[in-house]
Amino acid sequence: MDPVVITIFVAALVVVFLVASTVRIVPQARRYNIERFGRYRRTLQPGLNLVVPVADRINTKLDVREQVYSSDPRPVITEDNLVVNIDTVLYYQITDPRAAAYEVADYLQAIDQLTVTTLRNVIGSMDLEETLTSREEINSRLRAVLDDATGKWGIRVNRVEIKAIDPPHTIKEAMEKQMRAERDKRAAILHAEGERQAKILTAEGTRQKDILEAQGTQQAVILRADGEAKAVELVFQAVHRNNADPKVLAYKYLETLPHLAGSDNNTFWVIPGELTEAVRTVTRAFGDESAAGPAKPVPSEEEATADVGDASDDVRIPQLDAGSTVSLDAATAADEAEKQAAAAVSDAKAEAEAAKSPQVPRRGRTSGN
Image 1 (cartoon, rainbow, N blue to C red):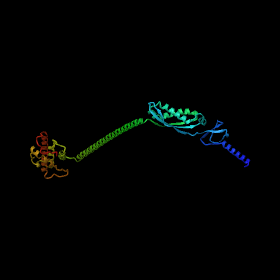
Image 2 (cartoon, one colour):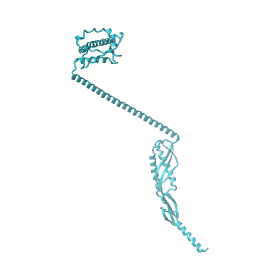
Image 3 (tube, rainbow, N blue to C red):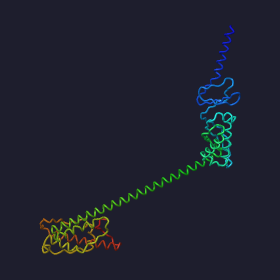
Image 4 (spheres, rainbow, N blue to C red):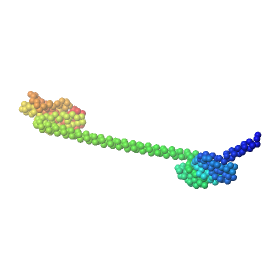
């Protein structure tokens, strides 16, 4: 082979090597630290960069994106002498590649040891319950200490989170029992509160029901009284408008007497003193006193007592129409009415005597009991 060709080929290889050593392409979010003859020269930015061949070399390649570092659980003693295992999660970012490469040998190990030391200082001033409920305070104190210490290393701590706090097994069982008792207490309180509200609502509903029923009864009584008053007023007006004579009134008076004894709740009833006058008026209505004949004797009390049961059932007062004429048996009807009235008086007396003397047997009642 020709020596000239070999020389050209060797020169071409040297040129290619020099060009390859001169050009450095840095990816996005990466930083390269360049040393020239062992001394820091500069940091290459993303893109195409030119360096001096042989003299310049890349010392460290760093990633400037935010990164996550999770530490292993570390035992920490609380203020009440309980050992808990705590593991943390650290979010950090390299802000100065030169300081991260030359100010600390291993920034991850340094951050981990600093986190453990700070945790022991913070947790050592808290008891277990405060430790479990004060995660935000612990995180903020950890971040303040780490951010201040890692600033000179060219690292910014963005966030520190406690991933887990594991107390001893016996403490977990005690906490579970306490939580179960607390839940049972809240359940009992809620159940009692519900029953109380239910009773209050039931009592309120009963009260409203009683009030409404009382108001309805009141309105019914008022309306019934108004109706009876209007009925009495209409009867009164009808009587005065038709100019009813004393004979009709006496007849209606006698017609009302059997209704007084027709109730099942009455044990005795009183014969008013105007009964004789009413009988006489009815008698005159059915015929002359002279045509009526001599009055028959009133039966004795023994006979009235013996026949009072049959007499109370047989009392029937004949109806009197205003437009009807007097029949030929008016005298007989008047005598019958007088006899029935006398029997009713005797019956009332017998009932009064029987009420005063229980030993005397009563053979009949006019009340129907």
